[in-house]
Length: 108
Image 1 (cartoon, rainbow, N blue to C red):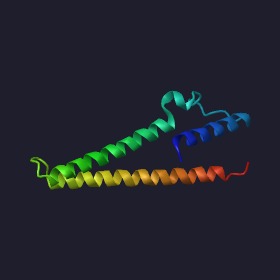
Image 2 (image 1 turned 135 degrees about the vertical axis):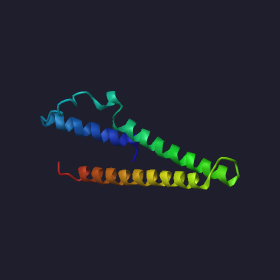
Image 3 (image 1 turned 90 degrees about the horizontal axis):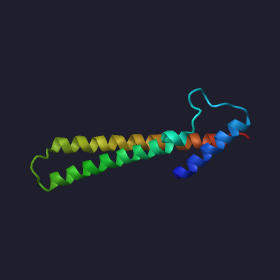
Image 4 (image 1 turned 60 degrees about the horizontal axis):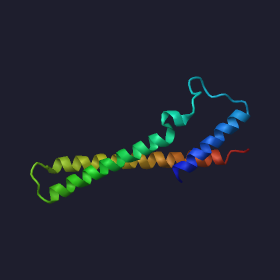
């Protein structure tokens, strides 16, 4: 599912809430797009995960090539950090998909 599709669903939910007379919570009157919003935060998180993976793979390659100053323990720690970041991102994605499916199955 693309970010544009998620934002479209969020806009539809906001419009339905306004039609139902549900006001946004205090302090959240400004549209989400003005503050960067969910899509920007999601993209930033994915970029951080990708950066951690690229850095870890770069260090692993440097170690394999025998470059000085690259210790095995540093490589292993960076690979584990990248793995944990990826697994966390995967779990967040799974929760978002489950929440989306639950919202889509709500009776109209």
